[in-house]
Image (tube, rainbow, N blue to C red; front, side):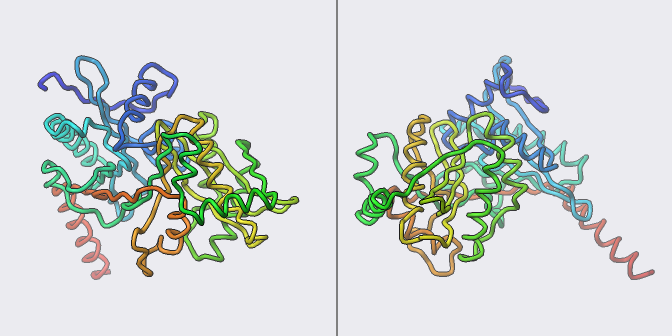
Length: 349
């Protein structure tokens, strides 16, 4: 492992040779996902966030790395976050431990210059956490849902449908019988139409929703590469609901969606999910991620109200170790001292 080299890669064209190598690595890593892709990094830059890309090389061959995102600092401090990262050979504990150590050391050098107090990683690892993560602490916030529902798409379309619960199959057939139609769009106009449907659902069901600008940036970065599609459920000109489908590698993700208050008895939401699954299979995906699920549906959990709906499509609940955080203690001490000085100066004035 002495020949391992780490480099700061900067902004890379996904269609370049190096960019293609990185995308292939991410897609082949089940513990990673689209948030470590160059397309997602472009979206974050469009949102005025910084993206620092570290690459690990063995004999000039790219073998792993991570894309860390940082936002505007508060009081001169910040954190760097790698959602669904790092991209490592997690099946090989020895290599992963060595690679992670190199990433941590390089990140600390970067952090020292930028006033960053910690790095947060969030690979999709199943418990228990590897021993070499013992220097990390459980982060207070997960960007990727710690619990979710995976639907197996690897079988035939008939097999996927048959694996659903009776209620799910019944409501899909009911939507079809009632004449619900699903359309898809990859145009910029789709963002406003999508947002009108999902914001109506957000107000009714009281769930948090990103700004319309977030989805505009997402569409700008992911639609040209074929990784994002808007789906709409309609009936006689009425919009019943919408969702955004993300396809990347062998996993598809139901990132956001919702149904309007119009003709809810026609089961437009079921038709949307079924079409999304069919589209995902056509894109080569073998797993459909519902992106948040509570197996026991605890009433106080933010996903409780939606988990019963999701469960009707079958699938298997999965649970990850969650986000892990490593504090750069020197930077943390400097921040504490600086904050104390600011309080002292304010008291004198």
